Image (tube, rainbow, N blue to C red; front, side, top):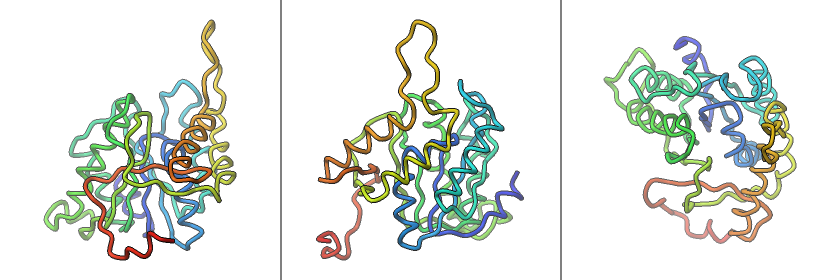
Length: 240
């Protein structure tokens, strides 16, 4: 697995998620906006999402490939971790260390650390540890030259949080919807007998994006959490 991860191309942005569709739900709009600004991105999933109630490893891999193409990603990789059994251990962290050193992103987008899905919690912990380890010169030098992203932002999962910032994605709402529609196995999944209809990933994402957009006076927005205050060196930039 590590040789494949080391071969990932360099990019300005690395988006990391526990399962195929996680990062699209949380940050596809931001990736589309960054692409419009000429920024490159690489996507990495921790697992194939093979134990989900809808779809299987093969179908979800095909969906992830289609979504990556719509996002204009340079590449999409997979850490090869086990769905529903992720652990923040040395092997898992080093797989992401290899990715960070290969891609050398300025911006890293990761899951928020509190979530009802244990894989999301584990993926956030793996990302936190790997980001630190990747910057240590003497940690696994065979995985590449040390590198840490300049900025690490956590996107929304299943747990609400007070955002550090909200990215206006009003100009790419329709494009994000098309990205999410790539995940056909996850759209409008059948509800168990006797249960109310299940809200699919597209409906859930759009409701949340409208809420965050309303908070900044926009049609739609994606919320992010940052550990500690964000430095502002150009106050005029905040004035638009």
